[in-house]
Length: 386
Image 1 (cartoon, helix red, strand yellow):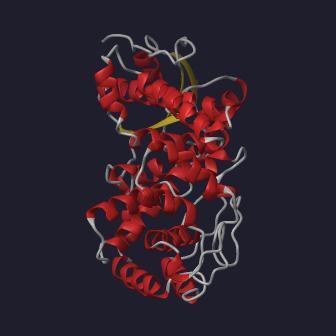
Image 2 (image 1 turned 90 degrees about the vertical axis):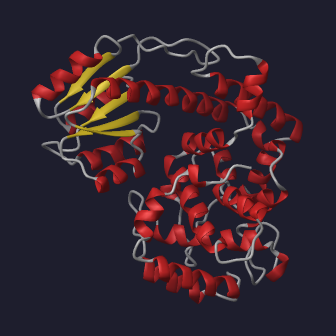
């Protein structure tokens, strides 16, 4: 087995990554330490309290987390870790796993999930891949924290996108020809997805679910293939402007009586400006710009009304409101699917397009039984490429 080749960030190389092993059983904990010590600096904890103490005192890159701990459920600890230490990656390693718990772990921000007894090569590969992803996310976080140019002038924004793409696609890659790098550069979805995750994992989850709900509605409409692709991508990027907000957290978003998130009202225009240099279809930018416009003209940022709001934006308006009503996030009290559907229906003719509201109600009622699992499974990979 060879040591991990840590790709350099555009600024510097890193020392050995530090891995925290959290497991209440001495045998598995010691086995993991022996396996991982040649490749990483290792710390260990036998319960949640000890793990949190280490996190408060030391720089940790990645955690291997047992799901069953003596003082706390591992899934609860995972949520606290991702809330307070978003830049730390977590891999769940458990002997008590199930498909449901695996999906829950991934939804709450785990980078991977392994069952005991695990394959050593599989574990090392997963850790290496996760740490490489962490390098990309950390690079993005540094760019976002140090520059406001993504929502500045078009020239400044274009320059920052060039910096982002060059640095992002160089991480973990060996020397390639300019042609090869240019070809890979065309696939923007991984970068866009990681930008959302670098800002807030819950924002990425929200964006993925909204794209999923919008696609469910699109399947009942007479849209062209190009419109369907623009809808899926635009729905995924609808809140892209939120990354311009320094202290933004999806789970902290205040809810209005309408069920709409009360965030910065500049984020639609900011988001549209930020993605402009990417050369995406005009419909994608329209969705980002107009997803908070209302059928009665009382929305923002432009006060568009009725059919003056582009159709795809009207679809995403409903989809994002439904997700804000039903999303399960730390500290939230989500509505049931039935109650959320009723609340959306009550706002037909005011907040939402009445025709699309009726369609939404039918589709959600038809899919209701499988909707939670389908929504949890939604991922950026379901967004068609442009």
